[in-house]
Image (cartoon, rainbow, N blue to C red; front, top):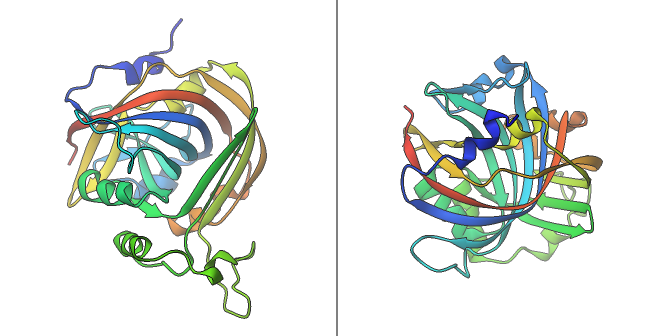
Length: 277
């Protein structure tokens, strides 16, 4: 029998799509939490979604390709990017089950500017990259240690200059030679994809109806649509970093994920939903 959540993201879009993306090599890592521990971290008008008796926080890493903003053709500037996110599964009073991003770290400056101004999604400049070899997927994202201001300040810095040679020499401990310690606010994950899984829990954690975001003084909902996902169970080989510290979720990486999945690829369409509050 088909689980209802499997069809959640196939619901027709209420409005015309604002962006269309090809998702590739997606890693989903999720951890169980008590709902109260996450309640202050989600947008007003939403609450942590309780799935299988727990609230859930996650890390997702993936590659966006062939980005389009209808009715225009694919954009060379927005066309391909690697993103690493920290997120919380959410639900609003209308019963729409979505995701609230605490951060979306990427090196794509136009995407950062557009997401902040138009979507309310907290994109942050970082050196994010991914690599796949067979069934092994690896992602690494590190924010520039000298760009520790607000998101738009980081965008302006990214657009104005290349990373300094000293910053590129930041070691695994986050130390510049001869200098003080700086938080790296990075994340590194390596997994190996296994067999296909169609468990209700895997589907519930990954098939979300949209995004809950703070846009100016409001909480808004962006609808997300894609075909049913073919998910694969995965084995964790490496997970480290202090990115959760930067978004008020220290300790997220202290234990192995309670759910670890890989999605080889799909096409995702986003459209305006409405104002939640």
